[in-house]
Length: 325
Ligand code: KDO
Image (cartoon, rainbow, N blue to C red; front, top):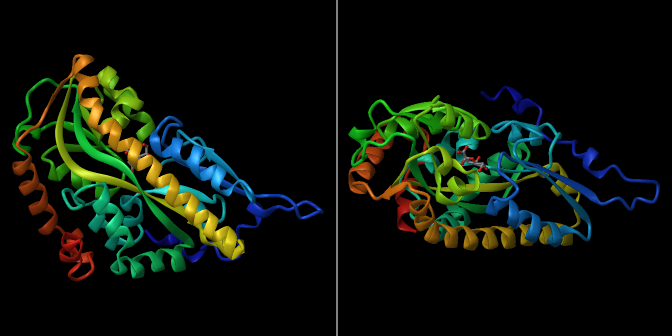
């Protein structure tokens, strides 16, 4: 699990700074993500982050996982082969188990709560460890949205019991698989870029993602219903190479931080607006969209987490601190 941690980014990052004889080259900031270029996180990074750092850096995003496969980006940054990604708590948890606290269903309440949690003092030791050991600086939190269950099957889902036997595509780490089981389904690990075909061919019965993603990646074309479980208020962290960061001047570091925060805020507002309007869009497309017994899902999911081995790795008292914010 931690095999690659011996080779952190220390001393790397020179590729990103390949200067010419005049030393005038800009810093190259390559980002790899499975997100599409039209996803609101991608739009915000392209339209807000890139201009914010343009004076000294060229932002070079690679969307649709064209540079690195989903889930391999953190390792690529640690090895000095990549400068940026938008990573998840689930990816961090596969290296540092305590991060699985933020993979728990029904913990974060909404976009504002995510912001408060990320800024809280109790996050400092967790962020520092990722920075010191992995060579990855987590700059800011991006809002992905409330994850909903999206199925190609037609049976109505009211409670977790109705999810029995449903092959639910979840991203390919243990933390995601756990969430799929906690929802009552049979989780199937699959990369984001393979969801559409898997739904189309019936290799899986459904997937979970926020409404803007369901529209952006056209999953509504190959599914029949959206069950508004809101089981995870999902996020991504903007991950930045510590080796590259350390070579920037204090002014440049401040500009990177501001550009990342501004991009996150812009993406957050757009994603929230989309979530509010998309229910009608899917109904117009002929999908059933409805709210199940969310209390039944919440109770089932929270119980599964609190009784799980995952919870044993959570920092003492942190659930209470998160809930108190
Ligand atoms: C997904 O694979 O379902 C997921 O939504 C997980 C997120 O953490 C994130 O990686 C996201 O995909 C990608 O950015 C694509 O939108």
